[in-house]
Length: 196
Image 1 (cartoon, rainbow, N blue to C red):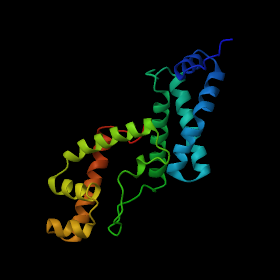
Image 2: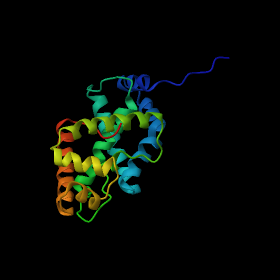
Image 3: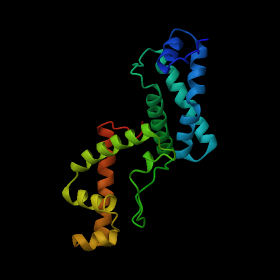
Image 4: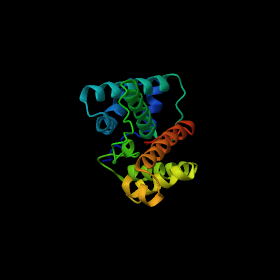
């Protein structure tokens, strides 16, 4: 007796585009928990997570229906990227993007890429994101790059950074703030996705 191999994402996408609505149900069922958990891990609210999850699949359906989806065997990565962008939109609309506060010594630029359940795929993707960010960091002015490297890679406090560089704590904080603002701008300009 032969075991039936479940259809791949690519086959399900192709079947859905050809008019088989059940294929979309199968895709959603197959990936729902991973996508929903990813969204929830960022917004920490069930209602908002549900809304963003639904918006994600509305965008998926529109893209598949209008024929602009490019099959590269990475359906899940593509859907995760859509959900990530919708999460960013959600934070922007609700003015909840974390602001850099002078009193906060533990601001983490990598907070959007942390996932509570890293697997091999997430680890590879996060490595790529870190590589992309490191390339962007090289483009920062020297004083900003120096503060960012000390804070992120040497885990120095702003007091230690100020003493080491011979500037006031406020100057060190200001340089970090400008470094983060510049990085955000470069991430947008270079269309780097800080997720899979």
